[in-house]
Length: 185
Image 1 (cartoon, rainbow, N blue to C red):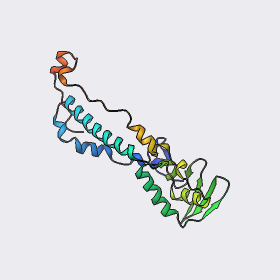
Image 2: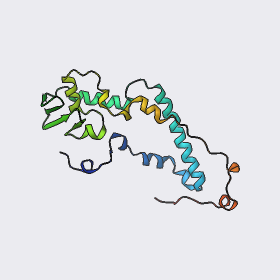
Image 3: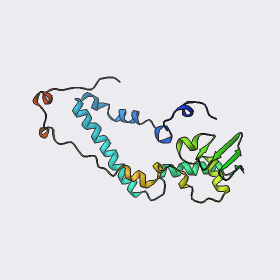
Image 4: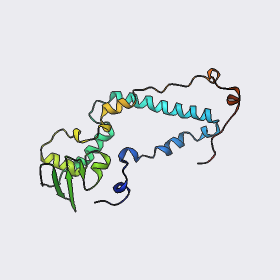
C-alpha cells in the first residue's frame, strides 16, 4: 500500500482540500489588515458573501449529476483507463496490471493507488473496471459532496450583512475601543 500522510491520517484530505484557499483569502485581504478588527471582519464577510452569492448562482445553473470540475476529473481518469486490462477476482474485487498491480474493491470504494478512497471520486483503475462491466452511470460511485444538488445546498443559507455600527447594542467602552489585527501571521 501507499506510504505517506494519507495512509495514516484519519481525516479525508482529498481533492477539495488541496487548493490553497488560505493564500487566496490572504491575497484578497492584504489592504484590510490595516483596518480595525471589526472593519477587517466586515471585509471578510463581504468577501465571503460575494463568493457565496457567485457560487450559489453557478450551482443553480449546474444540471449535470456532478459539478463541472468533478465531471472533468472523471473525463481525465476515463481517458487514462482506456487501455487497461481488468482481471476479476470476485464480484467486487478486481486487479489491473498497469506497470504495477492495482487492486480495486468496488463495494468498499477503494483502490491500491489510494485516489479512489481519498478523493472519493473514481480513479482510472475503477473506471476501467466499470467500463469492462458495461456500467454506464458511474456517478453512484462518487461522493455525494461532488454532486450538483449537494453543491447547491451548500449555498442555500444566505450570508446576512451586519447592521450599521450605529445600530449595534454594545457598551460604550467596548464601542470606543479600537483593536487592530496582528501585523504578521
